[in-house]
Length: 243
Ligand SMILES: [Zn+2]
Image 1 (cartoon, helix red, strand yellow):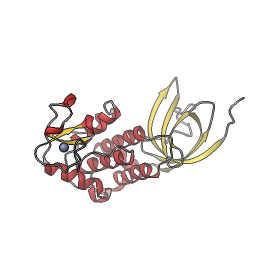
Image 2 (image 1 turned 90 degrees about the vertical axis):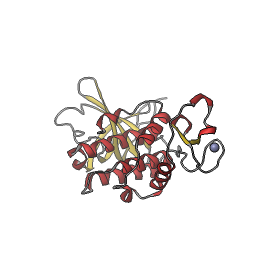
Image 3 (image 1 turned 135 degrees about the horizontal axis):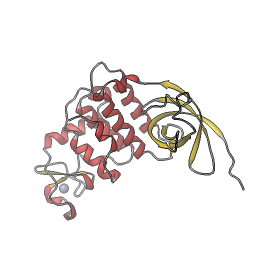
Image 4 (image 1 turned 120 degrees about the horizontal axis):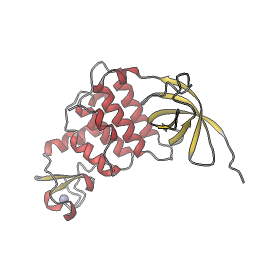
């Protein structure tokens, strides 16, 4: 029996794009209603394509036609937020690209308004805030995305013993966060130390609204390493990060 084809319109954020063939393109979308969605854009790379405005981080109402596979077909797009401010400066594009990649990788096909809302807030700030973001903003954003993705970083309890941090602590991305040095699993021995104040700062940033975290300073490298350990691969968007 042929699969029943239906068309629906959803609110989506473009979290990734992959060129196909001569002028087609697959769009990876984060939606509140459908979670992560992949959609094929026929002739999307032609100059007059109705999908031409679907850049990374753009929010749009898109028409999706279901087919026989998980891949939808894009049948329409109305850009709601073009977010040109994101692409005006590398200081903003870097964190935006990282946020899109991480949110897209953590999302499932289960609807999730928290992950969607977190990415939307981050992109809104990166587009419109008068200042460039701090490294603390990116650290806070990554901690929140991981938490909403069900992979909350261990910042306030050692995963091995459940006790609060005490000197010395080690940062173990493969183990999900900070361990007492004596409790580090043997297969990841040799993990670097992390200062208690860095841990406290990250724990505080995770709880802080993104707007308040926007100018805060923090070490972002441990959070990036944690994300990459969870995803099992390096972040492609790292190339956009400065410094
Ligand atoms: Zn411990």
